[in-house]
Length: 42
Image (tube, rainbow, N blue to C red; front, top):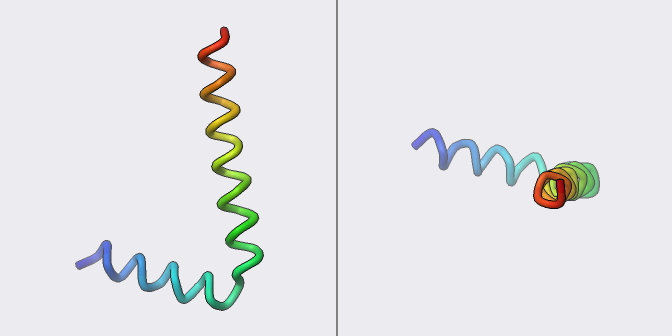
């Protein structure tokens, strides 16, 4: 129930500000990937 409401709010937020949400998502995703790779190589 709460998860569905959260997804609905997230979708509404992305509908209002698609570019900002997309940039934040890409930034967080790249940060996680780079952090994971740096831990793997170390």
